[in-house]
Length: 95
Length: 169
Image (cartoon, rainbow over all chains, first blue to last red; front, side, top):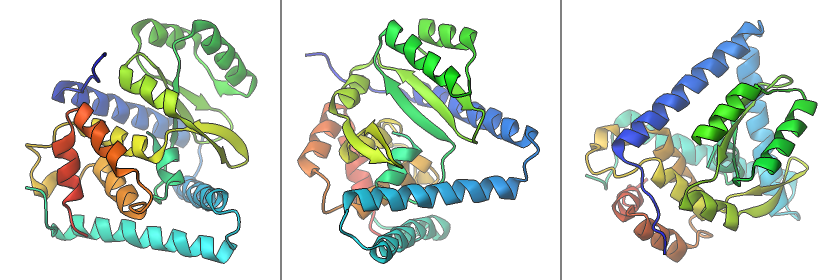
């Protein structure tokens, strides 16, 4: 059976570099349209919440919208908790 | 493995791109590209031909929104593995095939590779690690752990998985 290929450090570096240049090109393209950066951020944030609300509702069709929003809040709290570990450099496990 | 799947499974973060893996079929790709053109996507034919020839990713911008499509033509076993196991979901009113949660998590491990030499102080600097940890902890009760572990073993990523799992919140 064919084995799964793994990405070498060199491959990963090349991938990240290429992704970054696409992100820069993409950002330039958006800014060239003369749209306010805050307007863009607002749109991205709005789309994120809309997508998440929709996904949770699809998975739990019987769930009330207020409960869907509680899950979003819980997930936000979790993401913040992980980011705060990064800020404080405090976590157990790993090396 | 992109932002859309990550948000779908519960990580609140923004994304500018929709990552798409498509099978290596030139006629289907042409059909898809034609469809994108008809919906006002900024398709550059030369770029598409070159990316297809060289099996590199292609980025296509949407003229009507801030989003872009990052398209990969499947040519590796792990890409076909995701395609063959994709599940149909309704996302914002449209039926889409997306990677199951465990495959999204594995994708994050693949793009981190072997994290042996990344010190603790740098580990959480990587977006893929933040994505992995958030999705893992948000969905702990529903993750098919044997599937995740076996895939990690198959891909020589068991150490990476174990190290990330060991991070206590």
